Image 1 (cartoon, rainbow, N blue to C red):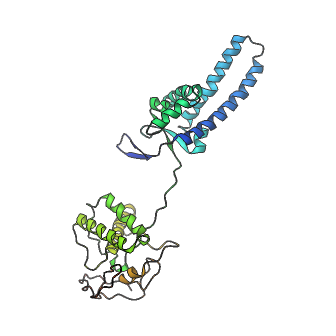
Image 2: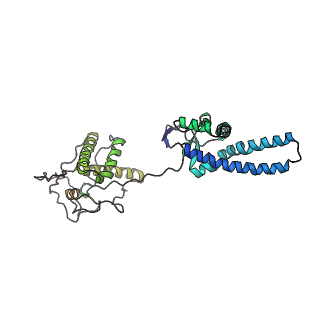
Image 3: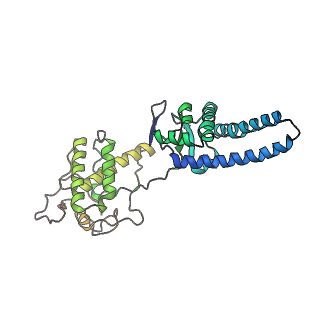
Length: 319
């Protein structure tokens, strides 16, 4: 991915096109242009049959420059960098700052293309694209342009599991301003993949991430709350705040298990007051008393003594 910076100091994450896709786009363009050139040359041959050799040569050179140089320049200028071949391959020519190209950019690219593509049969362009870090040929270097991919496959975003019902809204006063984006990304990646991890490895990762989050927020985690549940509740709080800023107060993001979501592990379900394995995000059938101890799940072990009851916070878990 290319980190292009605009004049407003905005970093654009663009994916430069590589040699295979660019070669296919150029090949499609050449097929179209050469076909049109041959058809018009045949017509001009019949039309100029009565002229002398010098006039026929002048007409041939003019038609060559017009169709194989002028037409590509006009097409890229009018379409803002999307010729027929680039349109078919999902490519576009843009400036170095990510903006649309103009006539002067297309003119330099077309003039250099006569040497790179037609004069050397694409050899110079291929070598320059392979050497360049962003896959640019000489025409792009002199014109200050870049060929980027417009159609990028979107990545599937896995939803973050919702927190236990008795933890929802418990961290509304937590200061999250000092938590960096890198830590949020690590927490999200763990939460979306924790069911795929080994229980011991997942418990260790959750503990380390919870310690980092506590160090950034400056507030200790509640006693007896599993690290994974603590991470879920804090992420839920952050998403609720983002939704409130984007859509106004009183609007919270929708949570719930997506279709085909994996079941919550039995040990984690029991520790969070869930009646047993089932879809994540549903309220338990039994009410968890406010003074009931909350066991801390340890992979492979059963706690011998219950954890002391949670301090009274004025929060009653839902039925």
